[in-house]
Image (cartoon, rainbow, N blue to C red):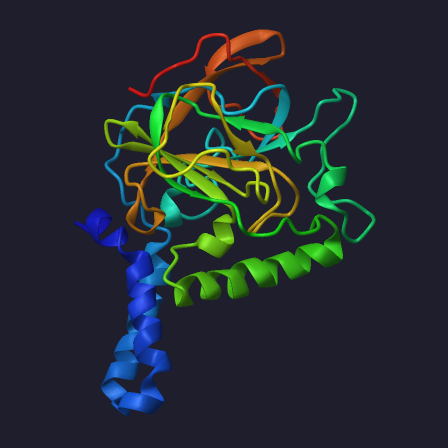
Length: 281
């Protein structure tokens, strides 16, 4: 029962904000209190899973090519990003690090911010992880400068925890300004793939398009709540993140000379293996 209720966490927050913020109009104290309660309930439910437990990972093709470093990997913890909101319980962030001699670090000493074009990941192709149908595609948000220095990280936290979520809620967009430019694919069997933080103007597909595994759907960008250009990828069980639960996934990759099928752990570089495209199952 609690898992079903948890799916509506964002709706509770929306209703709560509507009741609390319109208090000067309706003047009913009880409704204002109810609004605060709904907001609190929604926030608590962010940490409650909404999907069925024990689901087997869906094997898909890796959505990128080359050498990458995983960040916030579900191989290390679930929910990987500390929240079940927006169906991202099993989400992974992928940063392109083509040089094996270069160690990726989450924070830089300087400069305070850099143009997205200066990062290797920016503009890298993103491919469909399986055959599917596009159910949502958008690429109008701008690519902002990086927030991977200590001063910029503070700004990112304020922006990401306050302004972007509130703006998304006020526009009833279910995290649109957190996710940034994005694509959602219907992979069949109740599985949907979400790609976030895409490059402005780079999305090559539109709603209703059919894609095959390996087709380019867009490019890595730095839109939405992102510290530097990277791909945020996750599977979910509904086409809209607002009421979706995360779905575990696995893909083929090479690490330390070994080819694996699974999810690479955080900070463990891997090379994507795409010689055998997979279909969702």
